[in-house]
Length: 253
Image 1 (cartoon, one colour):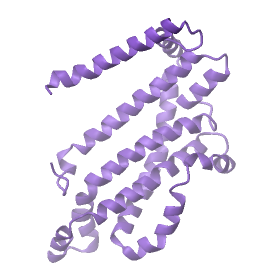
Image 2 (tube, one colour; image 1 turned 90 degrees about the vertical axis):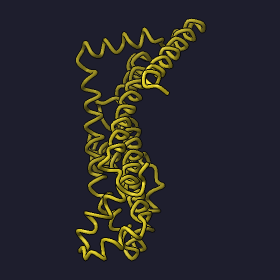
Image 3 (cartoon, rainbow, N blue to C red; image 1 turned 135 degrees about the vertical axis):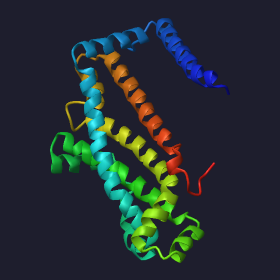
Image 4 (cartoon, rainbow, N blue to C red; image 1 turned 30 degrees about the vertical axis):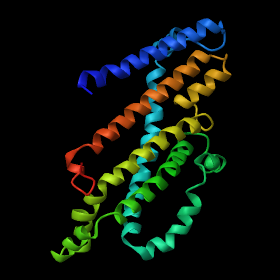
C-alpha cells in the first residue's frame, strides 16, 4: 500500500462511520442518543468552559503515575524472576493468584486505604499494569537465546554488566510489547476508577453527564475522547517499538 493510501484510508473510514452514525440517528428519530453534530457541540461547550483540557489532563496524570510506578516495580522484578529460577519458584504462586483478580474488585479496598480521590485511582492503575509487565518481562528474559548469555559470560562480563549489556537489550523488544499492553489496560482502568473514586477526568465526565441532566452528548463525547487518547498512546508505544536502538535483539525483521 502506498503512503498516501495508508494515510487517507483511515480518514475515509472515519468519514463513512460518522455519516452512518448521523444517518442512523436521523432515520430512527431518536431524542436520546445524540448525533455527531450534537456531540461536537458538547465538546465545544466543554472547551468553552475550560473543562475539556482539564478532564483529559487529569486522566493522563493518573495513568502516568500508576503506570510509571508499575514499570518501576514490574520491570526489575520481572528481570530478576526471569533470570533466577529459584526466585521465580518462590514468587510465582502469589503472582499467579493475584494476577487474575480484576483491578475493579480492589475498588472498595482502594477507597478505604486511599480515600475518594486520585490516590485510589492511581493504585488501581498500578495493579492493572504491574502484573502484565512482570509476566511479559519474565517471558522475554526466558526467551533470550542461550548463545547471547553464553557469549557475555565467555567475555567475563560480571552479572550486573551482563544484565545491562546483553540480557536487557535482547529482551527489550518483547518487553516493549508487554509495556504497550499494560498501558492499554491502564487506560481502560482509569476510566472505570474515575467513575467511582474521583471527581474529575474522562470517566467522571461520562458518569456525571449521565447523572446530571442526562447529557448523552457529553457521555458520547467522553467515550470518543477516551478512544482518541487511547489510539494516541498506542501509536506512541508502536513508534517506540520500531526504533532501531531497541530492535537489535532476536526479534529483528
